[in-house]
Image 1: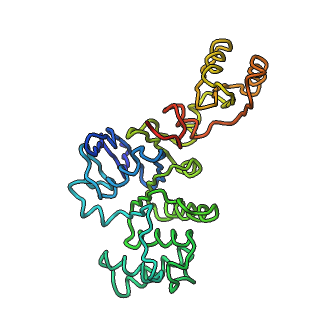
Image 2 (image 1 turned 45 degrees about the vertical axis):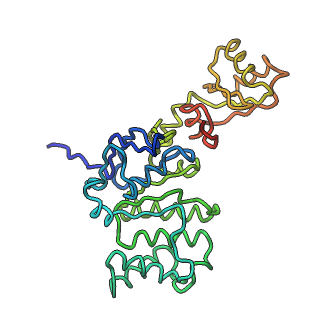
Image 3 (image 1 turned 135 degrees about the horizontal axis):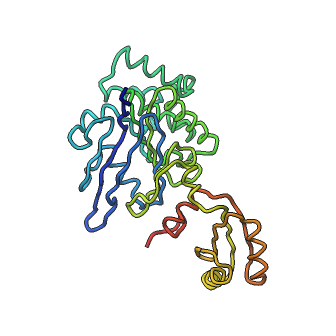
Length: 314
């Protein structure tokens, strides 16, 4: 019996976008599975917001193609907008309206009215734990509660694909936990596919799969565990006054590969603790401090780009 292949929720092919002479997105090809939480991790200016704007149908790419839920991004734009939900980084709620009024306005934009709209709003108020807040003005809500309303608003028309731009921006740790519980529930109970952009490592770690984007290109893509496994063992970070000079001598005398970031020499080693003793013994007066850690997604980013996520590009 033949095995049926499940069509992806999103597939892009060589998506490219230019702003004048600047290439913001450079031949990006991605596949996102149905009911998956997929993260785009990258620095500000790395291309993730441009890709988000293209996928949310706000910007037409310079070249390339994409399909979401089997619909062509460029040819089927109207039909696609009925099936996706979008939550932007910048707040879109009317601060002077109540929670219910904001939701009702959004519903009417999608042609939902009357009893059907009231029932849908009541359902979302319960689902997002807002049942005691429908008549509160949005301006009186905390940042976490406002974010809940934003997501509820994006789900009024029951989209199958949810796009979120930096969803945790401005949220306290408790509100971030609430946000992720909501996303997991959407994935597990309603089979909603989620694509989000982020520059936060802890947020990317929660995704099913992650694509690291830098200077408009996808430099790595896999599950967080698989990406961390690319790093060859533990990560040793040694701080010193002249990292370039020390890094060259460590590589020469100890026969290891090193990378230099500002005042830090970084070494990946399968037996980190044992190697630290050798390192400090060889260069006792030149190392100010040394740390040992398990690989993180930032280490993956450094391995692929040669710099930290929060460093500015040239």
